[in-house]
Image 1 (cartoon, helix red, strand yellow):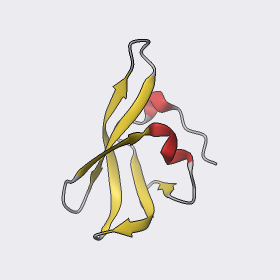
Image 2 (image 1 turned 60 degrees about the vertical axis):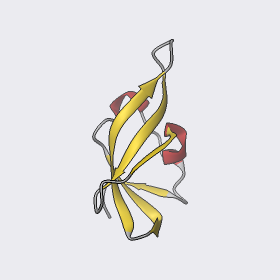
Image 3 (image 1 turned 90 degrees about the horizontal axis):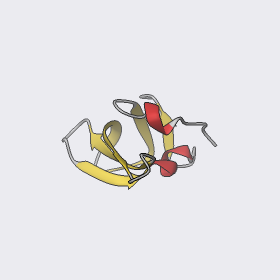
Image 4 (image 1 turned 90 degrees about the vertical axis):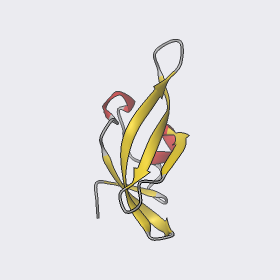
Length: 71
């Protein structure tokens, strides 16, 4: 399991371990906070086609699905 500081996710790079539609490399373009200013979700943008996906930031901690950086 990756240790991630959710406050430092913005503009971080990620690689999907199971690419769909040739979308392998992603950048976190937005972080979403709740009323207590805690990060709850993030928006990942696929580098190849600019598609955006909203997901809970904790999903990035799974090495079965995500690798930090572009591999």
